[in-house]
Length: 51
Length: 159
Image 1 (spheres, helix red, strand yellow):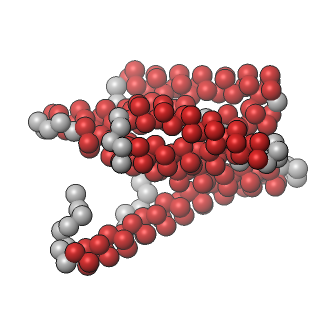
Image 2 (spheres, rainbow over the protein chains, first blue to last red):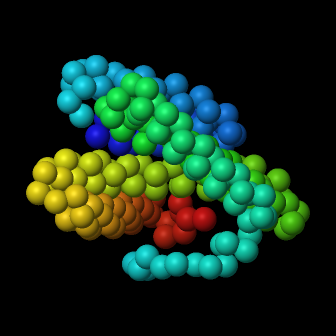
């Protein structure tokens, strides 16, 4: 569940980077992996590994 | 409102190695998740099932296809490629909502039967993903109509 929420956040961030920051797809998707990692492990820690 | 449909013509746009890249990345992500799961347990392994490994390649290839198509027409196509990749990522966000639903339904029903849990979770995924797409499409259409009415020009904002 934490992974799915992180994926939703990741996709939204990629979308914004492409539309607003006008980054190339490869740059936007690779940079946003950091966001996915932070969101996924943050949610996992926040829920205490219950998700 | 156009229904969801399968278009085989999109498959012809890709080169063979692009599909190899996707399959290889998908396979590598699955192996990586299995290794993580066996080393650190199912909680962390489950987390990596949602790792956007294929998405990076997919979005890059979509952008490349759009640029190629526009260059054939004598245009740069870079912005168009970025927008096509952005639409793909918006779709991935909707798919993630469906994935979340799958995880919730599966975790609630797995104790009764694994097969039943897979079937019900898959059905829930399909239902929520399509519903999310429909709601987004409806809200975008309504927003577009409001913008056009506000600007007074029916052609503004299209393209």
